[in-house]
Length: 99
Image (tube, rainbow, N blue to C red; front, side, top):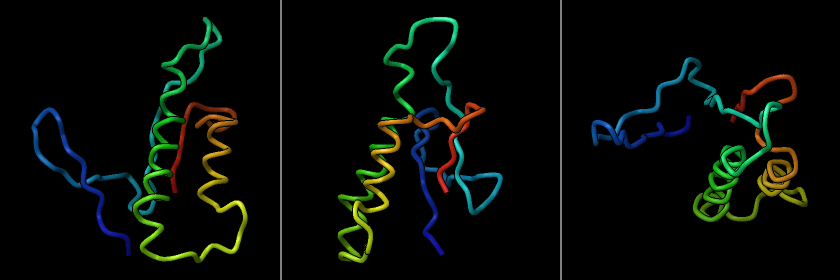
């Protein structure tokens, strides 16, 4: 079982456990590019945030377990490439899921 995720609540200035509807899945709703106006830097933040999280995994967590991946590129590098190419939105909706 994975350790619980704790987040800092900037409003109450306390640490809180991340609670989700499904214990096995973390999801995030994000606004995406709009068809009503030009795309801007604000549309890119969800993908950049997810890339930052994957890079954090690559730099901080993955080295603790040693080289175990049998794929090239690694799954985490593939995720970064996919996020940079396609963004964080699934086709047909403005929903991003990290499983």
